[in-house]
Image 1 (cartoon, rainbow, N blue to C red):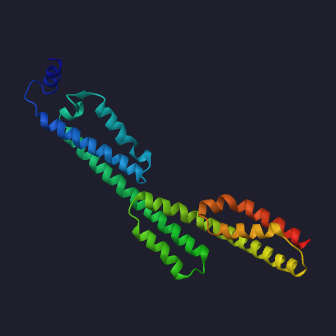
Image 2: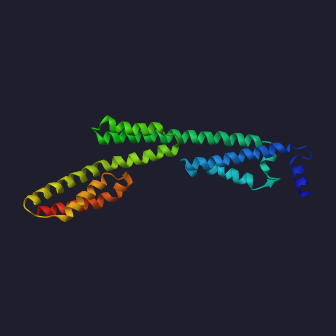
Image 3: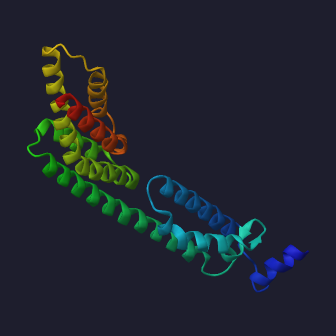
Amino acid sequence: MLVVAMVSSLGGGGLIDLGSAFVLQSKAQVLHDRWDYMRQNGIPDSHLIELNREWAAAQAYMVVGAGGIFWLPGGADTITRWQEESDAIWSRDLSTFRSEALLAEQNLHVALAPEPYVERKSRLDVFGQSTTPLDFSTLRDEWNMEARLVPIDRRIAGFAGGVVGEVHKAEQLGIRSDPAAGLIARSNDYSQLSAQQRMSRAEFLTRDLVAVQKNLQG
């Protein structure tokens, strides 16, 4: 009887379309699930805070399995607004992250100049196959880091080349340099690592290369 009284009070004592409230609740749940999908695909939590706050408020007071707000006039308008705001957030972030990824690619191309077209084409192909904000933000971060690594990688390559040269000189003099062989192997492995892995190892590898080169030079 309590439930009947609550429903009657919401409807002002008149007839209520019970099905409409349940349909709106179902649509709201679909939207809430979509927000989870959006987060998993690169939409920052901060961009969904207000929508999630409204969802929590709508679910705080349930009547016969549907949020209280969906029994009241304007419930359908709330769902429509949530849908429109969700679409706007997705479109805005997708456009923003896509533009940032494109700029990062262009900056990397400049940093690598002169860069063969074939090498750049592989990046552009990945860019063209990307579809979500997460895809583009991942590319943006990776390419920004790659651009920062360009001078570091070139410096390491120069030091590694210097060590190789000193090793050849030592071999001609009949001098063994076991640490140098291992270090050269590390340098080769370094070039095959991801940007994040190279960034974490670059300082230590550079320091070791400089030390071994100085040692070989006497």
